[in-house]
Amino acid sequence: MKSFSQQTKEPLILAENNSPCCDRAELFGMLLFAGSISGTSIKLISESSLVADKFCSLLNKLFGYIGDTVKDGKYFAVYCNDLGVVAKCLYSLRLCENNIKFRITPEVIEKDCCKKAFLRGAFLGGGTVIDPNKNYNMEFLTRYELLTEDFLHFLSSLGFSFKKVKRKDSWVVYAKVSDTICDVLTYLGATLSYMEYVNIKIEREVRSNLTRISNGETANMDKVFTASAVHIKAINKIQQTIGLEELPDELFELAKLRLENRDLSLGDLGALLSPPLSKSGVNHRLKRILAIAENL
Image (cartoon, rainbow, N blue to C red):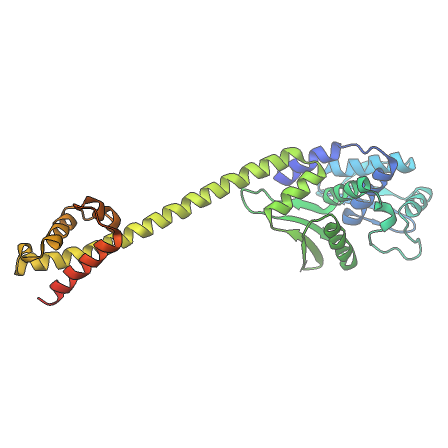
């Protein structure tokens, strides 16, 4: 069964860019988060054959490289050792052949359309989004601290609030706020995943609210029963000693009602009195009954 993250990525893999500059930006995002590049080779490794195939397709569109996706253990890989293609790629991505650093090159993502393509590539290469039934979490994984800082700044420029954390030998850029994750999914064009995410979020919130209401009602009922037990104990004591008939009329009426309606709240008891009495009025009379019982 496909994970929520895999389901989210599949339509993004099929998305076509409208210009070569966006193809370049998307390839750059994939390369930074799932690949490596030197002066002599380009490599991308992914758990998804579809992601590897997409990278291969972009190399072909941009630089005319016809390669294949190969199985590498449990992963899928694309290897390019064509020096001419490597040189073209380095130049296109504005990377220095003698000092390659995994940083975001601003020139590659100047346009808004390129920013979106770059983020899509980064997500395909090193991003995951957890099933919202389990948790709210979107992550981008990288081994490079400077890339992490660049990427946080890039996300912030788009209005997305993410944080970072070190996990073993890697850096994780993450968001655990459902609204942020939904905004990113919308921005990427993952419409179906966004709709599913929102629906699940609403269901979770409804269940949470129902549970909270139920717990609150249970707590209130516990309070009612506890208070009622105290009242009835005092009323029984009065009945067994001097008799309820010795109480003033207003207290006698309330004492009888309490014995007959042990599970009612003070407000509900007050509504049964003639004339009706407020909750505070009922509470005041019950305190008088408790005081009488205490002095017996």
